[in-house]
Image (cartoon, rainbow, N blue to C red):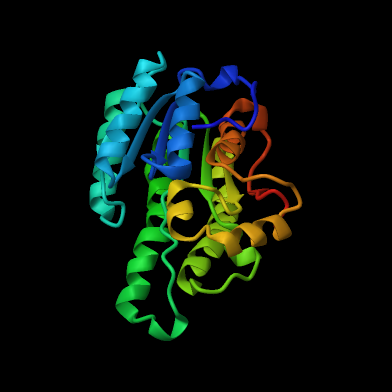
Length: 259
């Protein structure tokens, strides 16, 4: 992972914190897991990609940071997700920080969307986010507080076409965040949204970043250069740390000024 700067902030309040990340094995999730571990946090994460996830664990361990705990879990299976989270919390302690990162931005034509496809996309991109928040509530309440960070996408802000169901789920993140910020706030639990722009994950590079995309990025971003997973992870670190103690119910956009 390439850091966006030579020297970034260290957050003492993250040392020893228990963090749960969905989709932590690659892309933005990989950067989130790695940067939290570098801060001395105890990280647990789930993903459906096993080899990259196990390699990430070993890389972090070899670097001398607390090795994260990885569990294979298909987050569309809510009972399995709930069970996995409960087992991990029993092993390392209740979570202080939840990062809802997992998503899939598969392209689709509005005319081709069936009810089954709609339900499948909701099951991946929207439904798990609520149930992970529900799962950490009791533990965070017992601890007297916590931080939940839900990832959206600038795609719906920018009125992008080509994936209306995905855009719908990512717009819904804002509503979930704002509502839960009110419900969870009395227990000292902060709930915020981080909205990435077009992040240069390997998936994006392999599937969609062609010459035309390079031109569009240069045209649309206010800042030059590529938006990397580490840039998004830096914001997510801040929102997990005590430095953001009075930030809740907000959307933090990290997109190099696209929208």
